[in-house]
Amino acid sequence: MKNVLLINSSITGDNSVSRQLASELVEHLAAQSSIALVERDFAQQEIPHLDGARLGALFTDEAERSPEQVAAVSFADTLVAELLAADALIITLPMYNFSIPSMLKAWVDHIARAGVTFQYTDTGPVGLLEGKKVYLVSALGGKHAAGGTDFMRPYMQLLMNFIGISDVHFVSAEGLSMGEEARSVGLAEARAQIASL
Ligand SMILES: Cc1cc2nc3c(=O)[nH]c(=O)nc-3n(C[C@H](O)[C@H](O)[C@H](O)COP(=O)(O)O)c2cc1C
Image 1: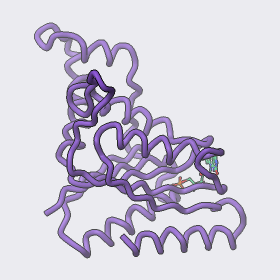
Image 2: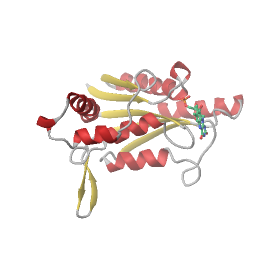
Image 3: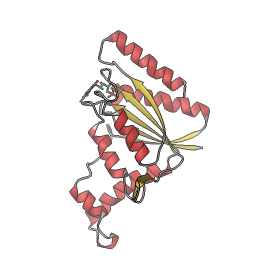
Image 4: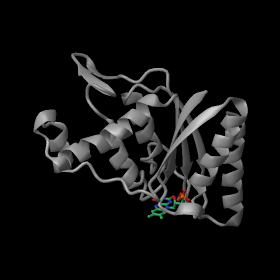
């Protein structure tokens, strides 16, 4: 049994293309081996930004934390625990303003924790997660290339590598807002990528 953590980051609920593709990917993976799915859905449950109060709570001694700080740390610890328990991650990447949704960035800020998911060393940062795989399922209204206007996929690849995940797979549906034909081609390409996984 493999533990799969699904992070749905689109704010468009049932209309989300990345959500639909991620669900098809889950079905595809479940047909290959049995999986236990844990899901975070930011359209259903907002994720707070890592603001000063939350960061301060993490740096406060456990015994001295206020009830609010205990709750803040417990929330972040839950996100980290879900990540640590996962054998594979599926993260949806709807492109918003050339980058990832702000709630996904908030998730990143909660789970990138020094000493737990990465650590700094004399030779630079080292990721501490081992043996995990990630599927990055993106949906883009236009067509964007890395090094040009895509600050989403290169960023997430870097971030995954930073925390130690080097087994990174992309599923991408592009051109979704460029007319019916381009949309159909974009969806077909993404589905072919899922079938090849
Ligand atoms: C707030 C917002 C910002 C967007 N910004 C971009 C953008 O910068 N580039 C682009 O190609 N598409 C952009 N789009 C279009 C989305 O990438 C497209 O609708 C995609 O399907 C979103 O994924 P989803 O369907 O899973 O929500 C934007 C859409 C929204 C709602």
